Image (tube, rainbow, N blue to C red; front, top):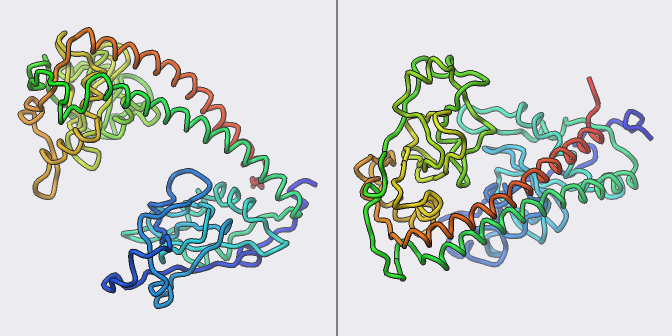
Length: 395
């Protein structure tokens, strides 16, 4: 049966929509209980199931509030702020009023099928949200969502195929995370915690290891001068995960690039975000020399031959070191690093051959990660194609 032959229904006709709530925060006996209490931060992970919550409430808190319990395999979807994020409940959990609980009508709508349908409809949900400060989706918006409903057996078959495709995505993502953990553990094994310095390395200032510490600027005209191709223009949002993210890149023309020669990048430059919400995030520029620039929110750290970029990257991005950096950057309403502070960052300095050994390990693992990332993109494409095939109705 083709999907154009399936009966068209509205979500409110086949789904129970359940509202959440929050116990009074001033009543101590309502909190620190045994019942997980969900907010959107707990399930905004891209994974199908959610099992844990940062906060827990008591039975008394549940009784004396509008909070509700969702059962295993019921759905939760965010309706305020980060709208449209959906997850399945892995065990009984309560939730707050910024979300809705959803439960498909027994014998009519399979919740696993509904999960993937809502994932496909996310752009539509976002476009129907409103609000000057926080985006919101009303209950009526959910009620009025229309879609074609296949027979229950076909819903379950479709959900099972999408589960297999989703598992492939998740497995590949887990492999990448495992490699990242391996590198972080290898760094600690070889060098020790860079704040505690248990191996007793000589500690020097970062400025002593660098031949350049400086940020960039934004060309006159801002977004109006950006192109779809040309020379890379790296912003703070591109600095992530140890490498530059080129998927959301702005470009500038050759003419503008030559006016910004002071901020031309060289391969293996360490890039550090120095202002804003992503302050402290670090990456390594891995493309050709003089093919990119940075804006004023990103600092270029170009090293002398006494230090290796990979070692400095993992030092700066270490969790304890990041906590120390946030303490340095704190103060006032806007966190920021200045160049004097950056040059004064304390860096334990192990022997260069040991740094090089670590850099070789990083290079080998990054090659493996590149293969996985390629497979991951194929898996994402497959998953998206399946969603399109099952849920797109055409114009």
